Image (cartoon, rainbow, N blue to C red; front, side, top):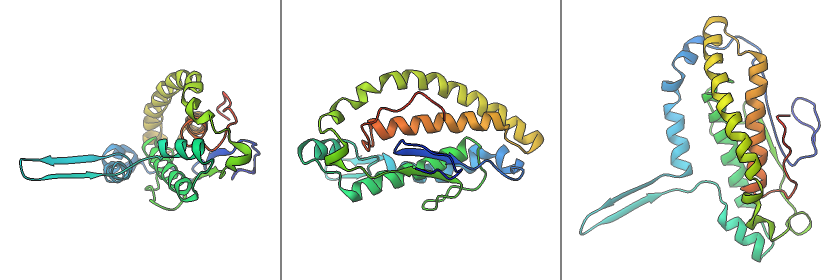
Length: 212
């Protein structure tokens, strides 16, 4: 697989984010945690939000779903199928949520689109279930990925420190320090690979312990 930056990967889940080629907007960076509210609310509404109103006469429930996980587990286990439209939904939601995350992490200052890739390039290959997926592994992949969760906890803590430092750097210089940019992108990439393995269930290839 050839990535947007021209590099190669043999893993079926990949991410690259364009480093800003111009100074970032200091004003929108300063007010990022206010400006981001509308798009974060929209993301919440299409992921996992439930509202209920109960009384003696009427009960109303409004709910929406997030990543399709349990249904995919059952389909792979019993039918050895991954419905294409379920896959497309999961990929579209991952792309949208990643664009929002990139905006929140100050990596780019374009307001996140609900449908266009913008400067966030994600490629997730549709799996050939019969040839490439073991029907039993979806039951334990979440468990096998525990070492990654442990390491990612520390990496995510470091990521937030980098974002705070980058916030000040952008306000004073208009630039996101490139080393920090690569690190933050690497953590997001690592997390995406783990999600592709353990929750999107698109591959049985164990994710690498790498930011690259």
